[in-house]
Length: 196
Image (cartoon, rainbow, N blue to C red; front, top):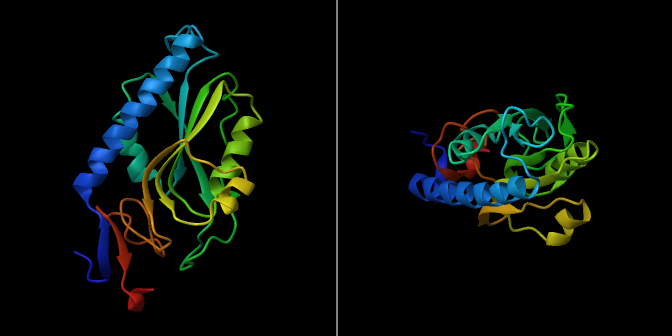
């Protein structure tokens, strides 16, 4: 399919199985929180509910699969954040490129991202969400790179739900890209050096 792929780190069946597990765990926790707040997520409940915020464009594929594993009434709100412009292999600093919804107060918010490495993106979005006083904020990431935890913890970035821990390598596929390409590759893989 793509001759530039070097090696597959995580296959599509393994990804699908882990996304189902994440969905089950997240749904159970959200049900518990909704029950504790006296909400059933019905139409009459305007203050408490579930809002999923995938970070575009990298979390598009993961987010789509994850929400299909959540048998809960929820709202989907997208946010665009840039941190890896063009052919960059390292984060250049996260910046929110679209406005967050202003209706997050009192809701249970789940930030969904493709990968946690520098922690800047999750920290930035989490701070913006917390400014609205939600009932809870969680982050769910497909991948977490093996980088010193002090790097991400110092930024306030954390993910309560993690699909896979991976080595500190540049990866593509399942929504992750290089220069806008490879998002449609169905597995998590590295690229050959000459392709970078």
